[in-house]
Length: 529
Image 1 (cartoon, rainbow, N blue to C red):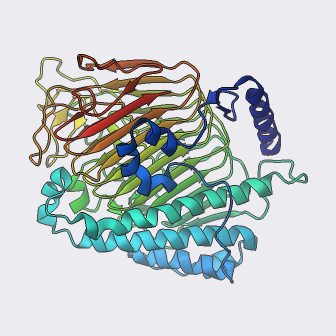
Image 2 (cartoon, one colour; image 1 turned 90 degrees about the vertical axis):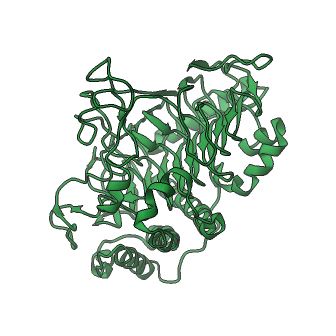
Image 3 (tube, one colour; image 1 turned 30 degrees about the vertical axis):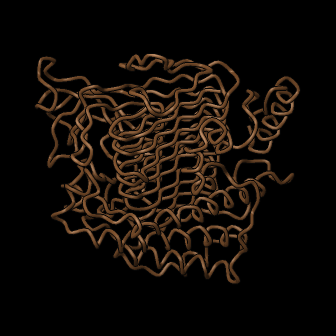
């Protein structure tokens, strides 16, 4: 089916749904959702939480119009931005010749240049903040924020909204070009193929089914059923392994990216570096994250796992955006700190505009934030499935955090085997400004989360509880909002029974201030409309 025909059918189904959904608005797939913005819905239920979220209101919905002007010299601006970002990560290259001969239209080149320019601002902030952290303090910083000043990292949050806006403006431009009456295929006029590792990969001339094995700061894919085995828009970029034949060579040579499979050792060994990441995929039934035989997690389990941390719209001390459009059924799989997750004041966003999608990760994912971060997973339509997976133990009798105990390794040194499920679907942990949000606008959805009574929190505010689906720990704020008027299903393992507080379910609200919504001065809000 051509992109033009598909969008016409989506529009028609939305018109039909409007006739039958008098109590709300209709999504592109014909399922009804509540009216008003997501922020308004949250503020109406809890004004205090709404006030806390208001500074981030611009990240909670997709822009519907283009307001950023094109640069005066679009092609030149694009070449400048690519070269600046590449030099910023220590791999200088002159991209002017490749871009000048590519045949990109000035409209597309300008929109990509606008996005990369905003990304370069974020990358510079990240580079400065990361350089200011002494290597010896990384263990303390990762767990508690250490002595980091939140105000010193405000620039990360400030530069996130321009990146988000310009990502959607690029999408709107490409969608408009693809909808022209003369376009019969799903290729987008004015685009081409460009491979400028590690900055830009543009797949625009065909709608082939691509497998992405290398990390890029920006990937734009116009169509096809694609598989992302890389950072998938995450800002933790593997600079060690480049594609064969690229203008610059990876620090350790060529080959598929491996990225950070371990936390502190991975950072100090430069398995990956915090930069900036954006992925925009316009169409196709895509796969983000692939389970493989364990590598670093060998010794805990033999089950297949996603090997890398911080993938799929995950921002560590920086900005990450994964935007999938086209209303198709996509599969998102992560490990830890993934699928719309922000860590160490980072901003991580995963935005899907429709389709019956599937989300799964081990823990600390799906709209999760840690240590001052902002994490958002926003799905706009479709009958979606949200779940977690826990790799089985090699030795079922092994105590947790011992070899063979199952799960995946935690953040301590080379890592202990941690099999305690927790913190998925709108959760946050550590520091007052930490905010994790999951928003689902429409569709009959299925949710599976978990609570853990034996979780031991960081030393800043000791806590023994961790939760899911709108749960805040150690001063963090977790928000869960399902806006659909259709029925949803919930399975929440280990959810505590609290007198006078309903269990999570369809048409239920769980307010902050009880054991089911927060711990260690944290707050959570669960809303199913």
